[in-house]
Length: 390
Image 1 (tube, rainbow, N blue to C red):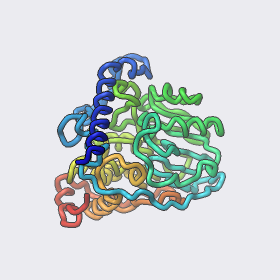
Image 2: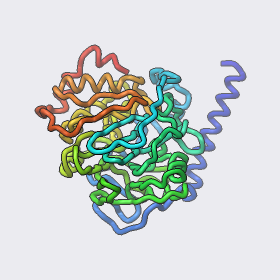
Image 3: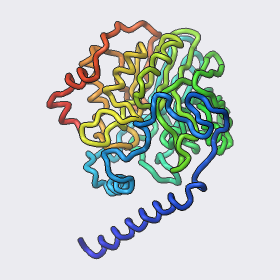
Image 4: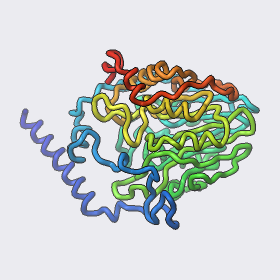
């Protein structure tokens, strides 16, 4: 190692130590109180929790070892991650101002951001137009431009914000939307406090509560995740999925960001009515070789089961191919999803290209498929081609 490299390495180590010391010394400064209320089955009076258990979302570094070592390997690229493309070509869409009646047009903007147009409503999920997903201009940089240029967005009526992580709650984007359109912003408890920092106002609801927006009724529904903007404000705000009930054609389900948990939450969403379209995450699930899910993020293996339990007619995979958040290769999520669907005999859950509008027909009950035990599904997926995926 040259002298210059040794000096650079020493500087980086010093910075890591300083950041770690800061986290220890000033935790109260970093904490925030986003919500005040009485205890419930998922709020202890100070912090929210998953009623089906938090053992798998407790924030331990994936793959073992200390947190400092995990971040060092991540920052230095010494963790064996497969390379991602520096940039993915995107042809940006220019959507129509409105889509009337039962027709539904859907455009994946990237990551968990999706534009849904139906019943004269323009709906956005977890809108992120920023180049990086992190605090103070840090964090992973997007490899795919937004599928719609911000200035080409039609007037937005409804925004769904699932939780307060930076790749889902982007204050810069919300501020621009609020200044331009004054949309109804629906989120779960406590996130309205973060959103208010942009000057915008949000409707904050608990799981099971709903709000009327135009022709739609938005119900905040349970999923399995956690929330934080800093290091010590963990779970000060709630996380959620959503069901948007529409007058005809079937409902919209947005899973937000979620692990499997007890796996009962898809049926809770399905109980609100037939689901025409489900937006289900499939990425950021692999932190060690061969991993198929993390406690906070379902992978394709569990996504196909979520799709089945929802009884949805159609699903679009999200939360992949935009920000590099974990260690799987760029195209591993859709390849593994396709294999999982073959093993389970399901159809109707397929990727769409960023920036390409997709017409979604009204709900027709799916043919259905027999449940398959997770172990049996993993055995079906135990092939040389799947084992070769990184």
